[in-house]
Image (cartoon, rainbow, N blue to C red):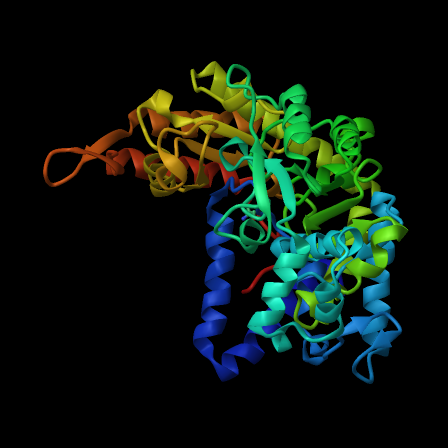
Length: 479
Ligand code: DSN
């Protein structure tokens, strides 16, 4: 059976089995494929995992409890889980050149929590923390938590500010990291939008953080991790990098030397589903000195590992070790730069004036719009993006002034630089033709907008036409 026939058969059979129990779920799964096939997906943090990766998740590994680590489990019968967890960790170590890989985190937030607790346990002398590690986290009393917080001593974290492109989990209030740590941020230079390493060094000298965090979810440039490590060392901080967004560019050796975080950071976290193109999940990489603490992630902050997802991580990481992945990673960046150039040529304003990674941040105030208005107008036109704050954002984190777009997904689909220019034309057309709406009382709205539905429909069709030459999952036909 050819691979394409095998893939179609596998997904069709799976849907048939599901349909026999709950047809609405089978229908929704089929509809999701149709929707993904028809939309111009520019969400910088999304991708399309391979059929092998997707199929590795749909099986009886899902039924297994496997708390503990390879060869040292709290449940019997984990020999096959051991096989896939060890394989995923081995591929991760080889791919990224890391001494240790912990592949159990269920998400990026989980991976960061594992890393934070590992650093706290490694760096802070706290008997209550030892007690917490010896027991299940749910067994801790209020008094235990109080003692723990007091002993941990309001440890400090310095990370990139949210409006400059940092992530919620880098010490911001809506996330537990903002409650665990006394956090301060470094921003970007208001004139260039770039990280000013002298200012980061100054902030580190003043604040003396326990952890300096590098990494971002909306910064369109390379980060010099060698310099950040030097800053961390100068104040005795542990240097942690969250490479969730650009792990695929590290894996594909587009980011090397000073721009590869792995040789420079004490600990690196990532998701596996963004530019790395694996299943939804997280991962932690570190040297031997933090490995024992990292491996305590479950049960310290994680529920039991998801063996079916670890199996899929092993498959996706094996794919990322193939030479074709390096080519893919380079094309992600080529496409992002073509998209940025296309937008700039048409008069759009971009944060930092361009990109050297997988994402582009459009400052939509130059179109007279908020991020929310722009995001919705683009969605009406078949272009899926997400609104995002820009540095010193006048519209705050809800309405925002930016739209973040990224190329990992469309690059997987096979679109190239010519199609990126066509995409830039569609985005510019929609944004240039959208105007802010008004509230019922006549005041200006940050959410409402006016866009001729005929234009939205026309752009939507143009987007579908653009995608027609690049079928998504071409080996999969649901019949
Ligand atoms: N939600 C991811 C993103 O879109 O960047 C990060 O958590």
